[in-house]
Amino acid sequence: MNKSRNYFLFIKIGKEEHIDALQKKGHLYCNTIRSYRKMESETLRGDKHEGKAYMKQVKSLQLLIDNKVIATSERGNLIYDNPDDIGNLFCLYGVQSNTVDLNNFSEQLIVIKNDVKKLGEYALLIHFPEEFLKRIENKLKPINKLFNFHPVNYIDFKSYEGELSPFYKSNEYKGQNEIRLWIPNEKEDVFEFFIGDITDISYKMPVSMFNELTIKPE
Image (cartoon, rainbow, N blue to C red; front, side):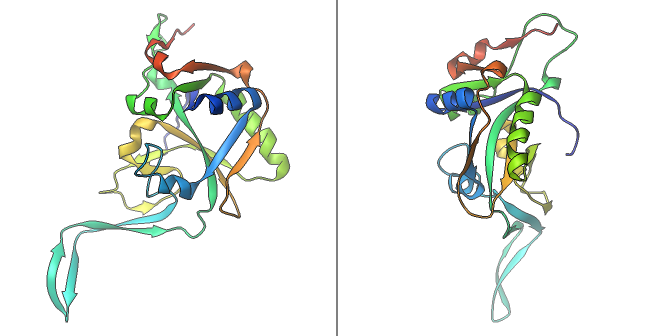
């Protein structure tokens, strides 16, 4: 689960005005982790287990009245809340380097999962991920903002037992190939900041053209 993952492309999908703000102003709008939890039944973005601290698998549960068993559940899980899960997320779709054959110098289709295409009409392709992260770091460090940038680990909630964090999600969301910027916060509020114009390291395109997106190693 902790294997190293390399990415050659970050993709942000959303409304055109939000994509324009990200590209032209470097506007990163980081919503609260609890807001993602509330969106679980509304869009692909939400997950009711966002920010939970620990998951415990239970082989059987018994319901009793006056010490008499009235029903038994064969399996289940207990999920504990994290009292310190106040913070903000900025989420991206990541395309890993191992999805491309670097020994094949012909054009190759970049496969984007269909579910992700439903997140918005426009996408921003950030084709220099390292520089993008550097600009985020250069903005947050001077204001003493702690942050962590990491791929999401997708797990089977029916079998997984252990610690949870903002970088763990149910494997039903695996198609999102998500990478997250996590910023702890002292209050339950949106956090937004600007890293400046990133036109030099990005390209805006309609999501409808994803099927035409290819890469050619040189």
